[in-house]
Length: 337
Image 1 (cartoon, rainbow, N blue to C red):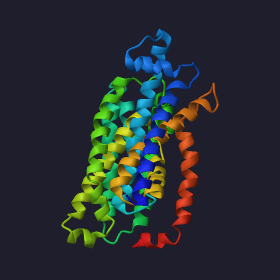
Image 2: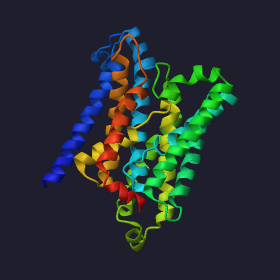
Image 3: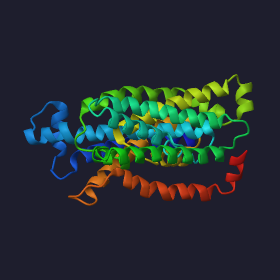
Image 4: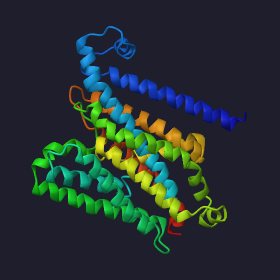
């Protein structure tokens, strides 16, 4: 076993350990004290006070589960989008997938407020619509990778204008969707609300891991990929659709949570290299841990007040995006190819 393999194993083990610690810490820490013994008792069927049981089952654990699902989905979607578009600046929120899902969710909530199950379906549809626009641009003749990012920013602006229009026409929608617009989780989340997104996210992450080798082949260039027997356009469409479903499912439970799909893949590649067969599953783990940790920080940073985790993500993601632009300032010329 060489040094590189040992490093990958060490990083993977550390990531899993950090995920477990973050999940347990997020379940314990809060305005009401719940001990580690309470969680163990709940999981093993031991004796636990009714108050602690109620807090864990109805408040803490569903919120942690939502953060785990959303974090893994957004991180893996980021890996796929960066690989498909061969663009280090791409992520679900930057190229407009998140905003498309958000617009359709707000539209569904405004037109059919009593259909509580509709926003999740609307998020999928909106993500797919945005992805269709991006895919059309990416497949355009001689369209540069930088142009795809700029087009994504334009699509984000268009859907953002649509969301603002809905909020102006239907002001009541803002009250019900303020958390959604900023991005974050709330204590009213229930396990049954996570069934639909989980059915999409868990198989979606497994499919992304299965298709990770295709991202490696795409990284060799279209001509090489064709020579190896890959139908590049079909593979791009398949993977971008998969990323859209993952992002849409994440948006349906986490709102317009940004920058996870940008930060996490780069962080993982820094430690384990560019092999997407390693990057994809590790990004799912690190993304879940990252969102859980940030959500816990959002809950306790200004206790007893709580801020939305989307605010923390924006503070972290904005500077990181600028850093990537500066780091790749020479490579940005290559994005015009």
